[in-house]
Image 1: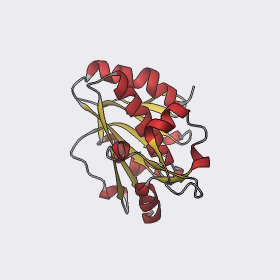
Image 2 (image 1 turned 120 degrees about the horizontal axis):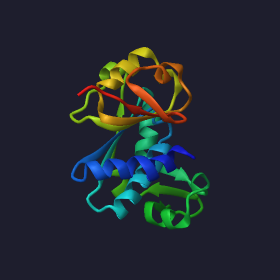
Image 3 (image 1 turned 90 degrees about the vertical axis):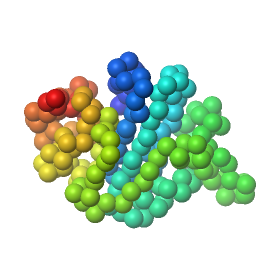
Image 4 (image 1 turned 45 degrees about the horizontal axis):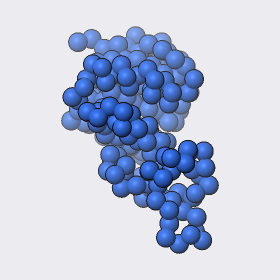
Length: 189
C-alpha cells in the first residue's frame, strides 16, 4: 500500500476524528520540483471535500533556491500529470492558453494552501504551529541532528514519511514504524 493510500485511509480519518476544528499542518522537507507537494495538496483537498470542517496548510522547504522558485510557479508539462485521473486534472489544473506549449498550471486555490521557503539548514526552521505530518524527500536530510530537531516540531502523535528506510529513525525511541517508511511520533506530553 502506498503512503498516499495510508494517509488517505488511515492517518487522515484518525486525525480528523480527534481534531475536527484544527488545521492539519504538513511540512515537506526537500520540495524538489514541487510535484509531490502538489500531489499532497490534492490528496488533502479531496479529503476536505469529504469532511467539510477539515482544513490544511503545507510548508515545503528546500535549500535549493531553484527548486523553490520552480515549485512556486506550479507550471508543468502536461505529460507529467498523465497519471492523474481526469476528474482531478479538471479540478486542479489549468491548461495553458497557448496549446502548442502543452503546459498546465496548478489552480490558484490549491497553490494558496502551500508556502515554499528556502532554508540553509534545519536550524532555520521555526513554526508557530506544530506539524501533524512531516515528509522527508531526500536522504541527505535524514541524520541524527534532524531527527532530534523534528521531535520538537510534531503535534502529539504526528506522522513522518521518509523517502527511504532509515536505521536512525527505525531505532529512535520517539518514532514507531507503522508501515514501511511511515512513522508515528511517540512524544511525551
